[in-house]
Length: 120
Image (tube, rainbow, N blue to C red; front, side):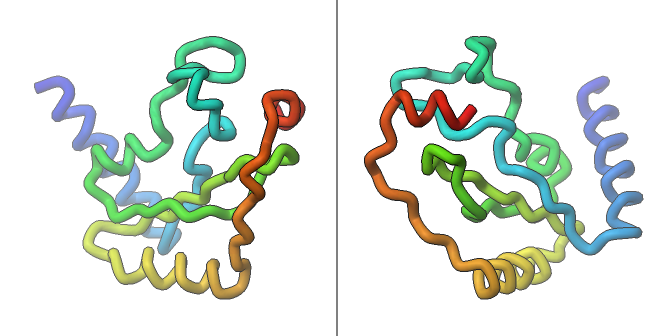
C-alpha cells in the first residue's frame, strides 16, 4: 500500500509539472552505453542507477527514446521524450520533428575500449 501511495504521489507531481510543459525531455540514461562485457555497472564500477525511464513507467505516461548524438568515442546517446497521460500523439510528433531537424547519423561500429574510456 505504501508503494502505491508513493506512485500516486509521483503521478500527481508529474501531472502538476505537465500543466506548465507539453513534454519533458530527459536523457535516456545517466551514462553512455557500456561494453557488453561490463555488465550492469556504472563507469565508476558501482551498480548502475535505475533507468531514467522508470518514473514514467510507474506513472504510465507515454514516453519514447530516440538517438540524439554520440559521445566522443562514438557511443550513442539517447533523448527521452515524455508526454502527458494519453497524449501519445504529442510525444510522437515531437520525436518526428526532432528527427526531421536533427537527423541521426549512426556511429561507426569500431569503437575500442580505449576510446570508450576516453569518452567518460
